[in-house]
Amino acid sequence: MEVSGNTVLGFSSQEICAESGLSAYQLQQLRRKSLLEPTKLDNTRFRYRFQDLVVARTIGGLVKQGAAFARIVDAYLAARRANPDQVVHTSAIKIVRTDRTAGGDILMQSAQGLVDPTTGDRGFDFEKLTDPIRTNSVRTMESLLTEQRVNADSLNPDDWYHYALDCEDDEDIQEATRAYEVCIRIDEKNADAWVNLGRLHFLGGRQLDSRYCYEQALDAQPEHQIANYNLGILFEMFDAHNRAIEHLKRANDIVESLQCLGRIYKKMGDSTRANQCMTAYFEQSFKGNSTERDT
Image (cartoon, rainbow, N blue to C red; front, top):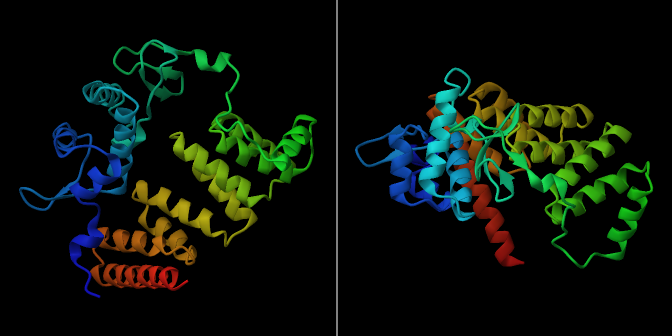
């Protein structure tokens, strides 16, 4: 299978729009204001890095939640102006929207908590004063028994791990995070708990905490596929290409790791390896799809 150079360079404008839900015009505005920093191929074509995809997805998600696009852009620009030396890329800024916070609906997560990036005022989150509401009203008996044991201060790490999974299903991320942390305190070698906790930190914009969790997972289980894959993605975000390659190669059971390797090799100017990885990726993906159709 022929693999074009463009395929492995990054993401196209069409792919970014499809993944984020943003329009072509909105994408153009983000480029003009340097909130996205793609490589320009010609007058009409651009290629975006993984960091750009993260930003576009975040902004698209905020728009879907009802936030005004212009308000989001202003918040990002204000955050960059306030921290010009600390913000290497827009993806390092964590912007959130909440209807239950005094001080503005578009806020930035910082060391001081939630702040309005345009004014610097702190926001007070009233949601912290309420009990979490479960979105799933029907629970399995096993799930309910697990929660009862956890509430009785269970010292069984499996109880806490499965309770954390239930909390994630209920979208109670704060409680899920706490449950994973308790699980790890009881059994610090629980690699799956470390990986899931790392994922929650990553989704919350806490990349350093996420990296620590993935490294702890690999300390417990060096060949953990998801830990290696996620850590590789994290290193790619910050252009630590050699570290990313090291971990993505270990995630050899995850076919998407080949796509990531191809993209990284292309960035490094190694077209031969990039094409090899992308060819293998497409072949394995096609083989997997054929197997699914045959079953």
